[in-house]
Image (cartoon, rainbow, N blue to C red):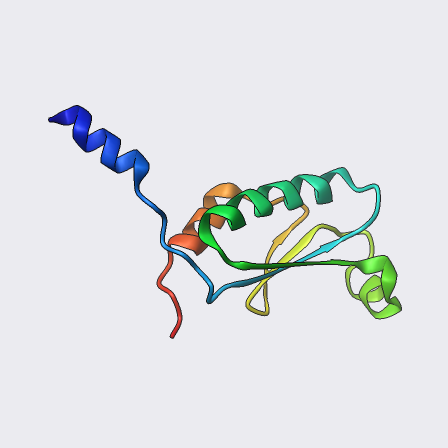
Length: 100
């Protein structure tokens, strides 16, 4: 009985989050940016949110706005992470109530 419960628990599909749009600001040759991209891609595959990436070096405005402080993760227009993606906080965002 317990084994069946655990099997169902681990096999459950997480709630899909198409209502969330993640924007990752990065720079070339940035190890933290690569780490953030890997984390977000892994969660995107599981939760189905939109994920976009922009290189800040492609526009002067983005360089002025972010400088060397990358990666920056914006979720639905709000800055949520700078420098490092905290997976506990990311999970809280994904587990939050979907907006209608």
